[in-house]
Amino acid sequence: MKYVGISHFHADHTGQLAPFANATLLIGKGDWDGITAIPPMQGANAAGFKDWMGENARKVEALTLDKDVWGDGTVRVIRTPGHTPGHSSLLVRVSSGKNFLLSGDAAHFHENYQSDGVPAFNYDRAQTVASLERLKKIAANLKATVIIQHDLRDIGKLPAFPADAK
Image (cartoon, rainbow, N blue to C red; front, side, top):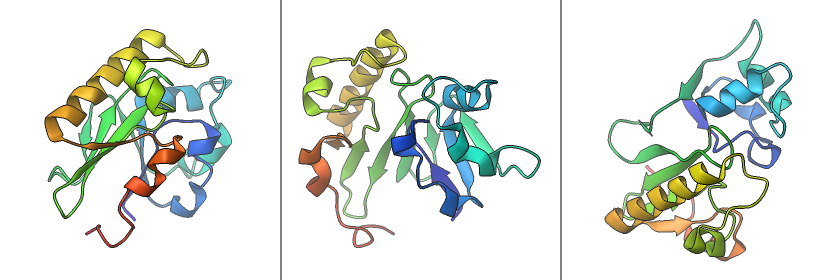
């Protein structure tokens, strides 16, 4: 595997990184800075990133801009700071041509997404609202199906892997 990407540095989104320790880590720069700070930023699961730190560190790509992962528009990391300083979402175009926009924790439920509701524990309220508005524009422009990853109503909306992957 060439890349492993995460939406943000919280443990519920980073707990399964170890099997991908030889991959280049794609992470928002704000989150990477929070993980590598001494001490790490509150809420950062620094232990989950041990394979990318220290003398045997694997390659890290700390993103400050969006990234077209394969250069063909099929997988794009979308920078959506606010929940954490380096939060990212993911835009995926599957082989059928359909677009899926995975929110990460930019929103936790559709109600948050629709109303720009920001949990008190988010890092930056203004950034969160701006990121939500950006996601809404992307979804509208591309007719993307929005997947709110903590909203159980969305689990069945994703095509089964690997049937729709190339």
